[in-house]
Image (cartoon, rainbow, N blue to C red; front, side, top):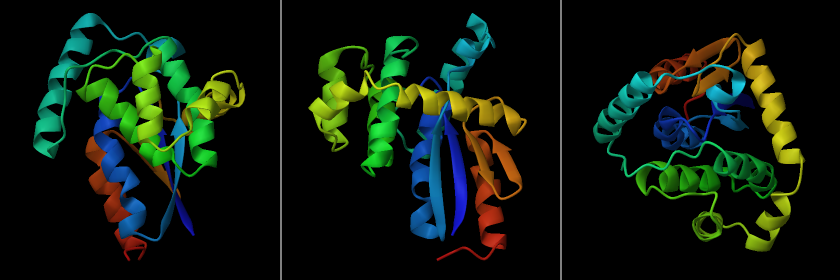
Length: 194
């Protein structure tokens, strides 16, 4: 079966906007989706000036409205919230709950203003995604989640990509939630439509 790789950052509003459409691909195409959580750009030495951050939030709000997705209030997850989310991805993947977790965490960050560094909102997200809270507490101390994130971040760079969301299908690489249309066209041209 063909694979679509989805490079995602919990700090990226564009990743949040892309996630529902990307996680829906296996319903429409004979593909396996491979989620790849990566470090936020600012933790990779790529600073984002304040004016650009404001523009991104305004633009993401317009895109969310166009896509019919809720947006705001927002709580920037930079710091412990990002690392907690990334640590949980390994657990969520093992339990086949990655889509549920990423969608719930994204909604909490970008549409509810939830601080996922705090126990109560993080627990709510985990339980909403079908994850056991005791398992999540153990995962916060498991280095496997951050090891996977480091491998994913390295792979993103090896593919010649830097921003998120990014996607890879076969030899095709795409960057940006606005390029999902091109990814879908490639999947259709490959004859993978169900």
